[in-house]
Length: 370
Image 1 (tube, helix red, strand yellow):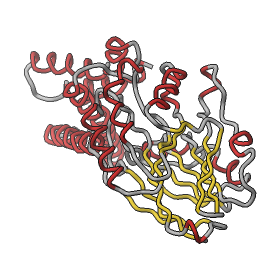
Image 2 (cartoon, helix red, strand yellow):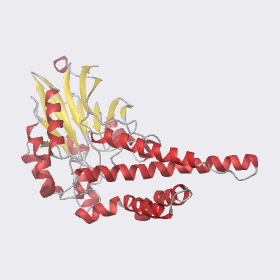
Image 3 (cartoon, rainbow, N blue to C red):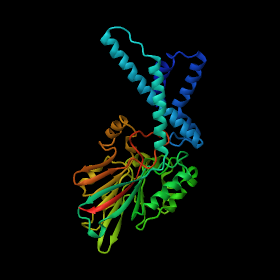
C-alpha cells in the first residue's frame, strides 16, 4: 500500500521537479518534503496506530491533506503533460521538450486545486433540500421532513467546534426526524469523547436514529455502539422503529454495515430489520453503503438513505468509487420502484480530505404522498 501511495511522489520527483532549472539543494529539499507528504498515512499510523485517525494538531492535518492532495493532482497533471509531449513527438517524429513554464503552471494549478478541495472538505455544509414522493404515504405524513447527516468522520480534522456547528445547523433545520447514516468517527471512544459529545444535543420531535458505518468497526465497535446510544441516538442495528401520526404509520428501518462480518460482528439483515413492521406502511431504510439497494427495492422499501462514497470526491475518482458501489455514488437514483439517495457526506475521511465538484451536505428530505 505504501508503495502504491509512493508512485505519485516518484512521478512528481522524476518528471516534474528534477527537470526544472533549480539549484540542487532546492531540489533535494523539495524531494524530502514530497516524500514526507507521500507518507501521510504511514505517519498517521505512527501517530495513533491507525491510518484512519491522524492524531496531529488540526492545522497539521489540514496541511498534510493539502500537500498529499496537491501531490496526487500534480502527478496526474504531469502525466498529462508527458502524454501530450509523447503524442506531439510521434506526430512530428522528433523529441518534444516540455517548457519549464508548463511545469510551473501545473504545479501552481495543483496547489490551488488542492487548497480549494480541502476548503470544501472541512466546511460546515449547508442544508440541501430534496423532495421525494413516497407511494402509499398517508396524507398525515405529507410534508414530513427528515434530515440526513452522514459520514461525519469526527476526528482531529472535525473536532468539537465543527461538531457543535453541525448540530446547531441540523437543529435549526427544524426537521421532524434526524438520521445519521454511519461513519461517525475516526478514532477510539477515548480519542473522540469530547469531539463527538455535541451530538447529544441533536433534537427532533420524532427522535434521532442512526446506523453504523464501516469506520465504526475499525475501532471498538461494541464500545462505540454503547457510547452513541448513551448520547441519545437510537441505533437501528437490523431493527426498525415506527413513526405514527394518528392511525398512519411510517417505518424507519436500519441495518448494520456490509463490512461487519469481517470484524466478527453481525452483518446486515434486512429480514430482521423489517420483521413485525405494520403491514402496508412505507419503509425508509438506513444503510451506510448503497451497494445492496436493488435487494432493498425488491423487498418493497420505498426510500433508502446511504452515504459511504463521499460523492466520489472529484471527477474521475467518482467513476472508480461508483464501480465499487454497484454504480451508485452521489444523489438520487430510481432503483425499481424505490428511491435511493446517496449523500455526499457531511464530513469526510481525514486521510484524503479533498472535494472537487462533490460538495458536502446535510440533506433535508420533504416526503410527499406519491
